[in-house]
Image 1: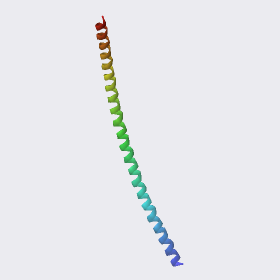
Image 2 (image 1 turned 90 degrees about the horizontal axis):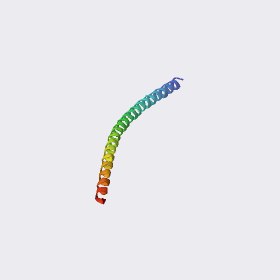
Image 3 (image 1 turned 90 degrees about the vertical axis):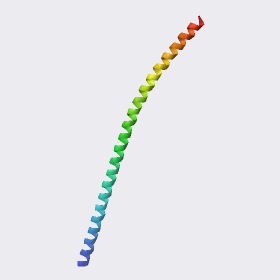
Image 4 (image 1 turned 45 degrees about the vertical axis):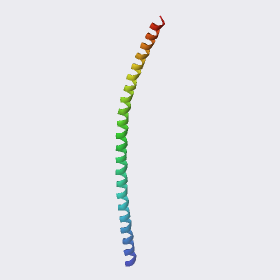
Length: 81
């Protein structure tokens, strides 16, 4: 009976150690996921800012191209006269 109780206590102890190890690994995994999410969020926000800046540059260049096209058209009409 005593050996059975000892074996049972040993199994419980082993189970407790395994459970504690699993909790530690889960906490590490949760921390890694949180860090990865924060990194991705930062990258997303930076890319959004860069995209807005590039969009503004494209709009500005588009306006310049349109202005040049109008000038060329005006010069072309003047040369045809």
